Image (cartoon, rainbow, N blue to C red; front, side, top):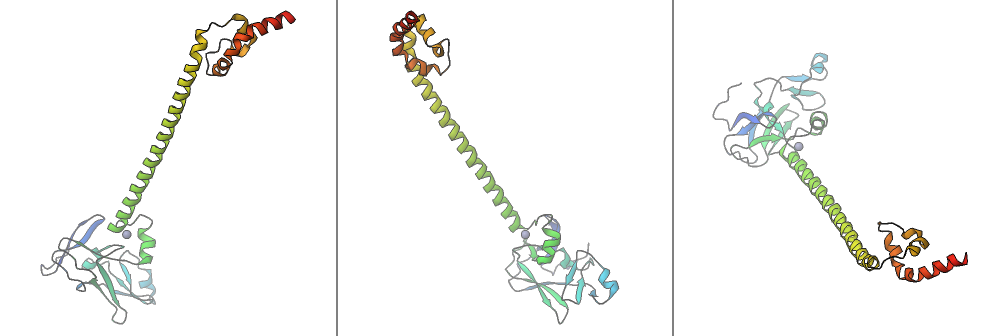
Length: 228
Ligand SMILES: [Zn+2]
């Protein structure tokens, strides 16, 4: 690991995604923190154009900094979608400075936005691990959980209502069937009404509702029998 002078307001440390750069002192908003440096690659140079690594910092169409050298401490700075620093690019000087855009407290990780291209190519496929995106994901998960719970409660309420309705119906039916049970069914009535025969099912309710008729039915039935 490269040596860092203690006069610097940062140190390399463990971050969520591996290593990162952390403030060791308060860094005031607008302060230059570190330079992102390395050999300049010329896009017109075929050999340079073939170089590919994660630490290429494009200054403009022609010039790119190859920041893969370990001496480039700035390469340890991780990306964040809501960063506390920015990369200040001087196209003319072909220089990149990382500058604080917020006051950074000691212990806080320093980060800057790597830009849309880097995000699309490297971060989007694996999911950005920056605080902002993690919080966004956590919020989405919480919302999904809440929605799941809401649907579950709704289903439970519906089921309870259904059960309650069924229970009430059953009680009502029981109340109506009881008297008919007390009344001994004349055999002929049962024969006259085949649907009422031997059914212990709720359908009996309908049959038993016609029960008052059953008292008449024997006569009707016997009359019918007699008629036949
Ligand atoms: Zn992010």
